[in-house]
Image 1 (cartoon, one colour):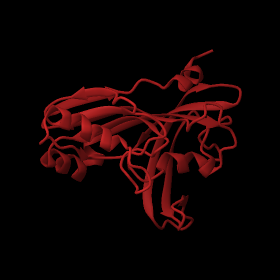
Image 2: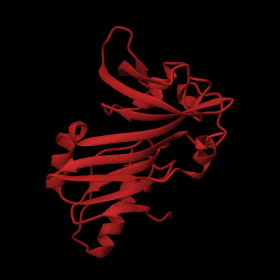
Image 3: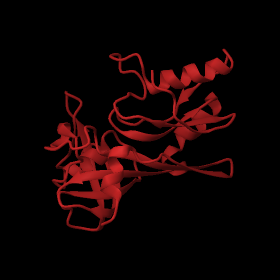
Image 4: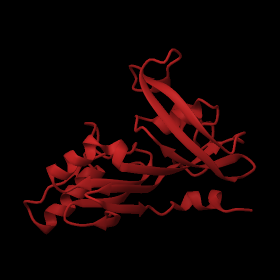
Length: 215
């Protein structure tokens, strides 16, 4: 079993760096999830300790995840998550993205196979994705991404809609997988709660660093 990669902890919250290829919470097919690891960790300290899901990352996405240690904190964060939380991702795209920065606005629907797609007639959930190019290579574009809405597969669908899917994302049209995983990492999470500001960074996974180096 992998060891929990803890970024920050206090009496109210636990912040960890989620590895790729691990579910945040069980979908009924896999028992070993990040939630289970976090639960085991807090219960080792005291058997009455609890942990609560606040938000999720896709199975193949790595990076910063926050858990609440009390139901009160969980409720406070979940009810106002998009207002309280600022999230920044690093994504490695296929091809040469034309613009250096932009905003992608989509309406998203989900089909019977749980694949998310862009609605043609503004039906579904509105998703707003901001991006800025931070590096370019011969075959790829590396972007810093911030989201104003937290919809399922939002970032992956946004760049697939521009015909520049994230590397390793076969589900949304990627044809290459040079780092043997999805090229999406939740790099930074910032929240303000009870007049306190927090900011956490999950270091870049090893496969990402070569794409983020200039020159």
